[in-house]
Length: 549
Image 1 (cartoon, rainbow, N blue to C red):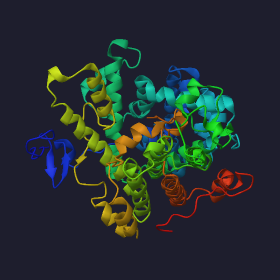
Image 2: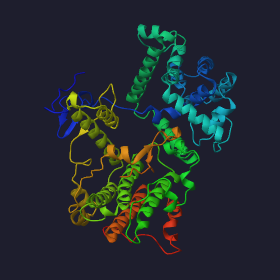
Image 3: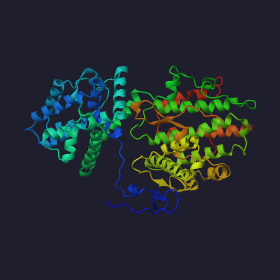
């Protein structure tokens, strides 16, 4: 395969191929490279062996191999050997595929699994906490919510297979061992020699682990090439797995590891309740102190509403982008409300512009296909790559240790691979290919753009790399797939009517976002009940926003 020649011209992306205002590495520009997420789409399908190896150690893989051999021998006359070998690759959906063709194999598979000790109580209880899982007949337990020990096992099992490359290779080697025992494996002699003593030969184990993971990925791509819908059931199950985790377990923030006795859901939604987490404002005109506390409470309630209602963890981009944009605007506003010197047109124009921009983008996104949210994130990650390349132009003698640390952090935000440069750099003016004015017009917010946004000064683009770095954090609950959640940690830095206008606009943005996400209305109303209940029963809810419904 030949690679396109770089055509970007001089500059930090000189080694890229340019198509219009989009820049790609030569490999990415071929269209052949496909980046898959095995943890998202495939890990849930291997839940059975993953749980067993976590509970009983890597040696349990030997019992899986023996189970494969016995099942193959038991069904040798019932189905073609290659098909049976493919169906004993450790996947739950593969067992379902086998028993769809050979119904009597259910009893064989289960009895042999019990015989080899592959279904201990803790494994079956953890499996039994999921509805609509493939091969439900494998265990006899009825579906029931997971207990603390079940959640601990699930979390440690998922974390281990994601962090331990050897554990991952053992899981992915299931299809190879099955093919070997069926006599259907076809590969080079060099590979056979490398895998023959695996996994006991420690001197070659790391190399074998890498080869196994690569073979697994190639084999998966081949199956998908032959049948694009081959893993459709597995992906449906993955969506169910991650979605169930969002209901049965909560998000976990870094600050909860630092303050183990703090649970943000136990904190009342009042200004005083947030005083331990947010630095106090320096000074306020009479009657304006509540503005800042109100916005912080709205942010906390917004995050709680998203995390209380079921989440789409399989494709979390829409919620992540909504939450990121809302938290970016709210965080800037909260800091500005803590410094009354900013409550004027000159010093607070960046807040005015940010609020208007956020409202336009969120409302415009609701008129587009859901893929727009992933495009938004990819656009920001590409810019992080570009800025890193530009910073590489700084002379060596001008680079301090702090500068180099900053470059490394920026490079991480591009979410590019160290070996394979696949991150696309899009230098168009916006993630949508449209100007903000065009988006405002499409969202019927042209007056907001013309009367507010254009007149405001300052520059705050809201690119995803910046939002992810400042307004979001990684959920530390491994059963949530490391999705991004709003950060409740505020990094800190007096026309009262001007400031209250900001609050009004922000509150309308929060309600717009929850409507766009389809957040459970009962959850929203329950969590935001304090807005109307504060101040001795007198409503504290801001007036409707002046632009748009």
